[in-house]
Amino acid sequence: MKNKLEISKEIRRNIVKMVYTAKSGHPGGSLSAVEILVSLYFGEMNIDPAEPDKEERDHFVLSKGHITPAYYSVLAERGYFPKEELSTFRQMDSRLQGHPCMQHCPGIDMTTGSLGQGVSCAVGMALSAKLRDRNYRVYTLLGDGELEEGQVWEACMFAGHRKLDNLTIIIDNNNLQIDGPIDQVSSPDPIDEKLAAFGFSVTHVDGHNLEELEAAYKKARETKGKPSAIIAHTVKGKGVSFMENQAGWHGQAPGKEQYEQAMAELGGEVK
Image (tube, rainbow, N blue to C red; front, side, top):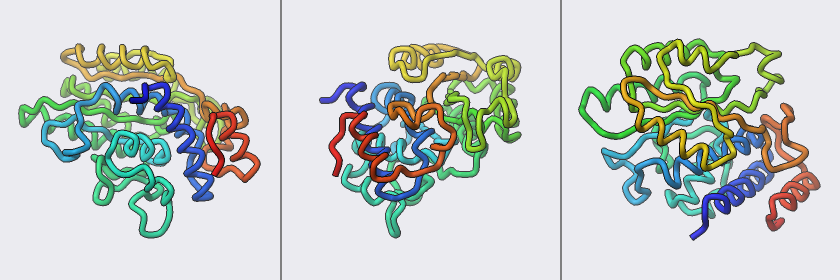
């Protein structure tokens, strides 16, 4: 069985291959979120791909819904659907469209795409668990540019007020959004102080360090009386030299030479 580091490398290769094949997609933020998703799906969350709709499963909402190359790759690697299906990404009649759809693809708990809305759905799921005395936890992944959406803070205000300690939000803090650096577009900083003011327990981690992520999830599980937020400091385009820290790779597909270079850097076979 592959370990999480090997899985992370495979996910990165899949991301590049999917976006190149589809000639569209979002590689930058997908590459920055790999370890966050791998640590959730291959260790932290109580899930069973054989029973994707099991009542007591933990729930995950991809609030930054455009990074489906990473999300689908992780779901396929975890066994929710055949890995061969990744080659149909963004094609007509494929289940793997540009944004996740819970009606068509197993393992997806919420359809997302409009930034800011996913976290509200996750808050609702966490409240539902509390009201129905269920034990599942809810996780949601947001982009740092997404924090410019007012709905995010409405949801956080409610989560803190209701003391939803079964909720963990993760911020993929790669400091870039489609229009450029977040501090030049509309800075959400200080993210940690704002979340703490809304009643969250806040932890900073290196978002590419699996051990730090796992420790943060453990801390969140053990925190009572307040929701948790993990600010994961990441590199947009992580693993591909010419994509790293480049806002232009937010939603751009590589050409043939770029694809071959990326796959060589990631240790993958060019097909």
